[in-house]
Length: 156
Image (cartoon, rainbow, N blue to C red):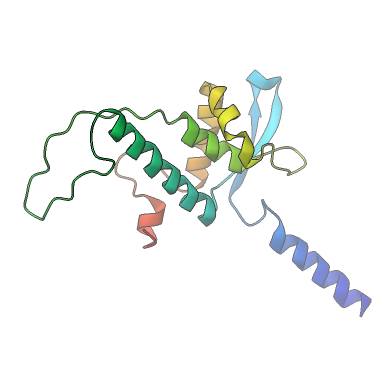
């Protein structure tokens, strides 16, 4: 019985490990004194929240320039009306990505969800590089031909 419980406990630990079940990579950050951090691919829940936050940011940016929150729906064969360019500050969105996927050498999350605003305020090329690695591990390429993984999986 003790042996079965020990094996079950090991299996439980593996099943619940926040890194084992996702692609992840150790990255040395020279700018942070050579610190080693672990970045992990986004989970399904992370993707859903990322998309929700992205939609909020875009809607707010559209309203800020005098457009409706949502882009107009255009029937097939019709042309979309010409709209002004909308600038979106993506720092908060990429900060969210880091908050959810950055782990220390003890495999503990470095930030809590409450830290998104603080990380966004401090966002730098280092943070951007780490975010890019998260997207790479999540299967998102850097070119326009790469499909959104949620859409590609049929979960959009």
